[in-house]
Image 1 (cartoon, rainbow, N blue to C red):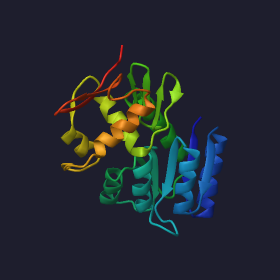
Image 2 (image 1 turned 90 degrees about the vertical axis):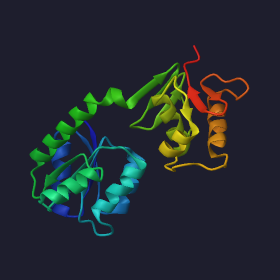
Image 3 (image 1 turned 30 degrees about the vertical axis):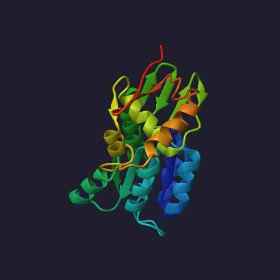
Length: 226
């Protein structure tokens, strides 16, 4: 069983998808607009999104881009555009799977099951562990000793990137490139400020570090304090 959010403006197709998925035991939400669907995905955090491209308020490909900026949820694109170039473009833009209209409820449910199997197989790759720190990259949740850390988006991105390189010194240039998506950072204190915030939330300080250790003139590394 999974939770699925269906974003589809055609009433009959939406009802077909919702009924078929509910009958298969899934939890299903739906919306007929792009912005309503985006809000619903953010609020409900489904396991899978089924996304129609021909929405009344915004093209589905633009909504896909917006979804990818806030979530890694697997997305199945439902499209009547049955040409190879368009499908390749959508997959490259962040879609995980597609179905071509008209589709049956059985086909959609089969695609969801296949996508869930792939996601389950890759699940261990989405989870990081350093000491008592646990990070789930897909759900964007970080915990320390079982307590959820309250991190903003950039704090989470910085912490998770350092965790993927645990034990290694990561240069400031790499952090600017990979976390801030800037080729170089100049002389501003952006990294220092975010590291200070992270240290406070990890219960440490620059003077008494546990997880985050600054290597003067080089960068920073995240280590297991044990």
